[in-house]
Every structure is written in C-alpha cells, then in structure tokens.
Image (tube, rainbow, N blue to C red):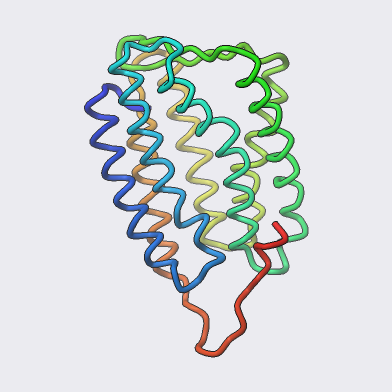
Length: 218
C-alpha cells in the first residue's frame, strides 16, 4: 500500500522491474525462482492498488484482486517458495509454516468467495475490510506461514530477511493504524532489493550436476 495512486503505480512499476531482473538471474537455479519472482508479484500488487485508489475504494474488481494477492496467494506462495530454496536440512521443519500457509490460504479463499471485501480511502491510506471470524487465528497463521518460514529457512540471508520483514511490517502497520500514511510500498521496495541481492549471491549449480527436484513435492 502507498499513500496515493501515483505512488502505488510508480512503486509498483519499479518493484516489478526488480522482480524481472531477479527472476532472470535465478533462471539457472530453478528452485530459487518462486522467491526470486516475489518482487514481481509485489509490484503487480502495488499496481492493482493504484486502480483501487482510482476507483475511490469500494468493492470492485481491483479491490478483490488486491485481496486475492495479499491474503490467500501470499500466505501460500511464501512458505512454498522458502521450502523450495531452503537447504535440505531445513525442509522438514518448514513443513509447519507450509501447513499453516495452506490452512490459512484455504480459510482466506473461502472468506473471499463467501463475503464481500471492501476498500475505504482514509486520507493517505487505504483500509480493507473482509469481516473475518476469529481474525486473530488467521493473522497468527499468516505470520507463521510467511515470516515464520523465513526465520526457519536455515539460510542466513533468508533469516536476516525474515527479521527485516518482521520489523518493517510492524512499523508499517503502526503507521497505517494511525491513518497517518501508508509506507508499505517503500518497505516492499526495500525487501525487493534485498531479495535481488540474495539471488545474486546464490551460486548456479555446477555444470553437469543433477537438478534439484525437491520443489516438485512441495
């Protein structure tokens, strides 16, 4: 989320560009592709929110598309992506955030299918409402699936990234709750650059090495 339609559009285009570069760099290491493509997904998400701003909020297609990406898709995408990229020794413990993400994504998808999600323009922020029952359980599952997966990844770069996500998200939520300004787009840009740096540091597989198929089971 950004503080205006223009900011969302500009930030989204920049983040998506980082995602294209990150994905291209990960092409020789297929199991890194889901994480490398995350900035591309975040960029598209920002661009979709620009359409929410232009529509003045409400319950239109842009609002629904924003919620689908932010809620069930990311809840499942992140733990699957981390499981694919993690070292073999960490994959068993990553089944916990994967299970949490699967259950949380299913609950959120059901809520989106049976309820109406709305967006409300509040100064320099956008508020979204879905009316979830027991939202504290959904939030706990979401955090375990996303931040928990990064912290349990067994990869030093991803663990540090998880700490950054936890701290940055807390700051963004605090500012957003005050309806002062939405800074998520700036945070997403920083995260995208950090992920790009992580992808660049990853070494491609040695010539002739057998491909890692661990992602298929995920």
